[in-house]
Image 1 (spheres, helix red, strand yellow):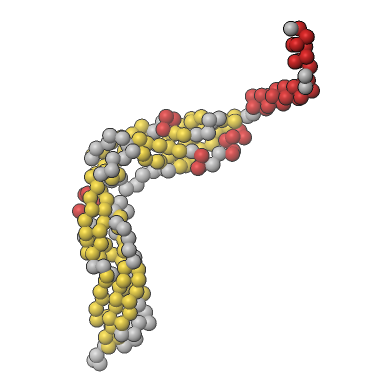
Image 2: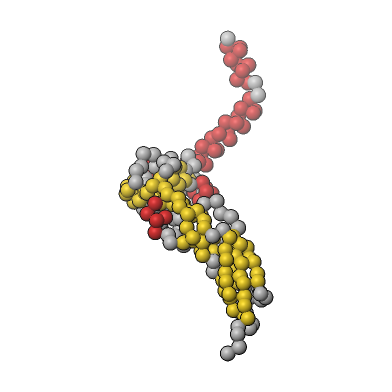
Amino acid sequence: MANFLQRAFHHNLGLKIISLALAVALWVAVKHDPVDEMGVNVPIEFHNLTENLEIATENIPQAQILVRGPEREVHRLEPSDVHVEVDLSGVKPGERTFELSAHEVRLPHDLEVVQVIPAQLHLSFDTRMSRQVELKPRVTGTFAGQRIASISVDPKTITISGPAARVKAVENAITDPVDATGTIDRGTFVTHAYVADPLVQVTRPVPVRVTVVLEKIPPS
């Protein structure tokens, strides 16, 4: 048995000594790596929101995360490595405050969270609603000796969706401005529709065709 252990100890002894030296050097390097701190700003991620609900809060701040760890790891950190995740399971229409702490932050394992700003997040929730609204075109331009006789848009209505209270408040959707300068008699332009409220979106956006018909200005 003693001979077996002796042979095992001396087998590849040089490689074993080198491996041990590298392990000790790595341990010393990590142990004596200076500690540093850094702040990163990242968007807050929301998970598990009930399908028929919408977040009705317009301005959601970014989270500032102060992290601490080995200097090399801290300086290597990218904002994409940090995730602030808020679980929205079980929320109902109305208002709710969520705590933002280290528990909601996902980091590389060598780093720790020192502080999260803000420490709380207050959100409003509303049921999701869809409805059709009139689509109004916007046309600009200068026309030598002519003026706009009529403007038509296709489609005439468009479907929007979002938090119910915000959707109900929308009177109409509008198109991106169409510059019809240089048009003679008639011109058709392809553009897009949008809603001014940032929490309300156009459902299944499609190209919008705006047709402008001009007529001569009668002599004074």
